[in-house]
Image (cartoon, rainbow, N blue to C red; front, side, top):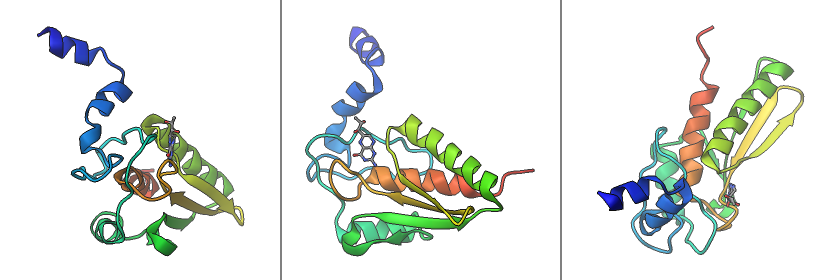
Length: 147
Ligand SMILES: C[C@H](O)[C@H](O)[C@H]1CNC2=NC(N)=NC(=O)C2=N1
């Protein structure tokens, strides 16, 4: 019982670290679940990025509206929002989710209502499951909300 309680008292990063062998940041090892409900894991430290094939499979199955950049290093998606304030609201909602997940996108706002979100795992210089988890969460934020 003590062991369980001691784990529960650990901060998320420590618990997640305990599962690092399953995380996308571990070199090799099993890959992990990608879904809108999944949580991002801390990604600093030695790890391996997803391969081109793994990236292609995840884009196809999980984030079909996102585009892969040269060398499968990043994914991005663009939106044209209703107006400047709607674009800023969207960016701020993305920021909240990113901060909660501890995994942060590159955010671009151009021509007052065009939003581009770019995702990559800086610690590894490539893509991990974190990027796809966050992309799915961003897609959910972009859906029209019940007015
Ligand atoms: C210490 C902090 O958790 C790390 O630096 C996080 C912050 N957010 C991050 N976001 C992204 N996209 N990649 C990272 O490697 C990353 N690392």
